[in-house]
Image 1 (cartoon, rainbow, N blue to C red):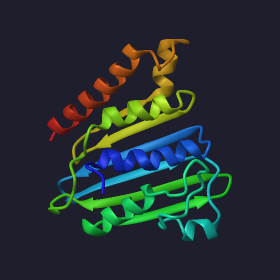
Image 2: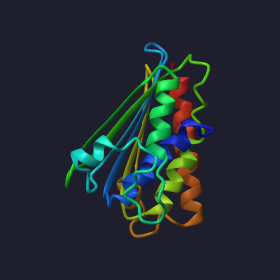
Image 3: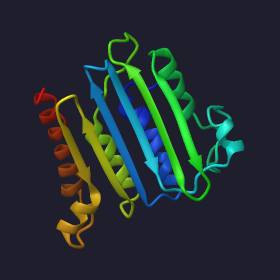
Image 4: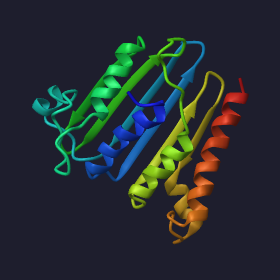
Length: 183
């Protein structure tokens, strides 16, 4: 398994990037009331056939041609099973994919959330032309980050400028801290 939930999510997001998505939505719901951490990643990429979708948790099935093993989905499913959670993937060819996973917050095997700002910064670095929406929700608040809004404000300045990337990471992490403090 991976050391934190951000790493698990980043593996799935990279699948979305490789699926030629233009828009990727990442949502984390951290609910003390439900005792759950819910994660969802939705993309508008090429999608998967029903036959491929049935095999998606097999680590030796991958659509990438750069390597013969794809562990991200199988690791995420294993994590959810180990942590009393749930796992579901929906996909349609030409429409995209939605992966939903959850873990029980109080399960001893749940890894920490990790650096979600770093995760999003890395994903943006992988393809700055995509639009990302990242949301973090608690029982009492929500933080949302949208690359399309940042691009509009920057008016042609690349998101890949080091100062911009560091600001994105910091802004997301500060938004998460503030949302947690709203409890």
